[in-house]
Structures are given as C-alpha cells and as structure tokens.
Length: 341
Image 1 (cartoon, one colour):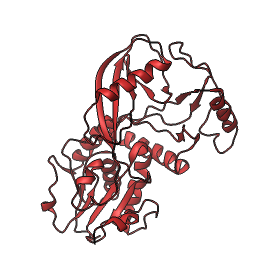
Image 2 (cartoon, helix red, strand yellow):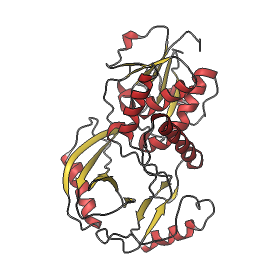
Image 3 (tube, one colour):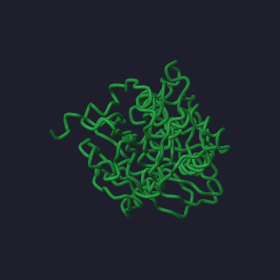
Image 4 (cartoon, helix red, strand yellow):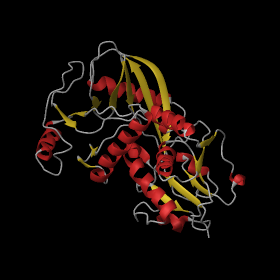
C-alpha cells in the first residue's frame, strides 16, 4: 500500500475498533466512518468462552485466539485507563449426569486443563444445579460499549478522524477502504455476494434484589452480572428475522428458559436485539475484493467475535500494510465462486 493513501474503516463495531487500534500502533493514516449504529456489537454481552458446551470441545483456535485477545484488551485497558474485561469464570450448570461425567473426564485431560475446573457446586440456592457445575477459566466478558466508546474518544484525542455519517459508495476515490459493517454487508454493493447468514438475537436486562452471583452462569442461556442487582440474560437465535428489533417471541423464550432452572423473582427492565454477522462455515472473512484491489473487508466475526477480533485485526493490518498472507480458512477469496462474473 502506498504511504500516501489513507485507509478508510467503514463501521465502528468490534471489527472496526480492533482494526483501528492495529493501524494506529503501526502509525498508518486512517479515518473511520461511524454512523453510531452497530446492532450486533452494541447489544452483545461480550462473553469470551473458549468451550463449545453442546459438544464439550474447545472453540475453533481457542489456544491461539484467547491469549491473544487477553493481551490485546489488557493493552488497550492500559492505554485508555479503563477496565473492559470482567475476568470472571463461566459456571456451566450441568443438565444431566452424562454431562457431569463428560466434564469430569475432560477436566483431567491436559489439553483442557487450562480451561476447565473440577466439578463444583454453585453457591446460590436460587439457581437449581442438582448435577453440579463446572467452571470455564476465561477472561469473562468484554464491556463492548465501553470498549467502543473509550477507544473512539482516545483515538480522537490522538488525532484520528471520525466521520459520523453513513458511508456512501459514491465517495470512493483512490484511497483504501475496509468494510467492517457487520450484517449490513449483505447490502454492500461490493461484497454483497458473500453468503452471509445473519442471526437475530434477543437479550434482556433484568433486575433481581435476591440473586447473588459473581460468575457468569450458563445453562442453554447466560446470566451475566452487571452490578447493582442488574443482570443481562440471553440469547436467542433466529435465522428468519433480519431486522434488529426485539421480538415478543424472543422475550418469552428467554423468560421461559430462565424460569426453567431458577427460582428468583425478577423484573425485565430492558429488551434489546441484534443481528450477528455469521456465514455458513462459521469463520470470519477478510481480504480484498476480487476485482477492485483498493476495496477490502473484515467481517463475519459471529458469536465468538470478542475472542476472534483482535487476532484477525492484526492479520488484516499486516496484510494491508506489509502484504503478509491471510490464513486460507479466513481469506475472503474462498467466496470468489459466488462473485457474479
């Protein structure tokens, strides 16, 4: 890339923010188009979970992505003087003796030793856990809204330009452009050919004066402590709805799930929804447009976005600035066959 060109980041969610920090560290000129709306990052609980509970396996590339994410966010915490990570464990409430036995077997496996605790009990009688729990050792969750807002404020102080309006494709000139628009990429005139499978999700914020937990609790849903008697609970998965609007069906589903294994009274005080940017193979995609070599994309972070974004933001920055190769399994070129000829 020519030193005279400015990189334009289109979108200010996790992808845009992590890429911005990587470009900033490399002293590469860039500016950000932020229209103030990101319907996935802004409502995300920000959980960092290296375990797939359904199959009780490690998440894709967890051994690489998790430590990298921890170091990255810790570095930004130092720069901004703000703590974004909760550094909590995730308490998995077992649904059966079989799950309990499988966990016990894996917790003694050296491949899982750094992630899984031994079987324990949950010190909260208002959450029913007759088969016990196992704790996932992780960095907890990222306060995504604080991360986005503090990062923006800090970068502006350092002279980075933020353009607070939607980007229009007619604005394209000789500079470089990286589209980090989340699920809105399906409407992008350049990258709309990518087989995106956006996923709608409802989340609730509840208040309970009786519940007292410090861990993040998971049993087919999550309960995330926010402080002052507030908890975030979620999330639903709906592949049919493509607008980030809360649904009555999603709210009812979450309340039913919560009441299926808890006995504490609660009040719903907020109902949000977002659209996750996922693709059929559940991998992010980054790289360059098949025809226009000044147009790039960094997207598809999906449900594991907080853990995935830092590592691949660095890879994207190295690709843009140094011409380094992008990993084959995340290269956007795997979708070239869908590009209209």
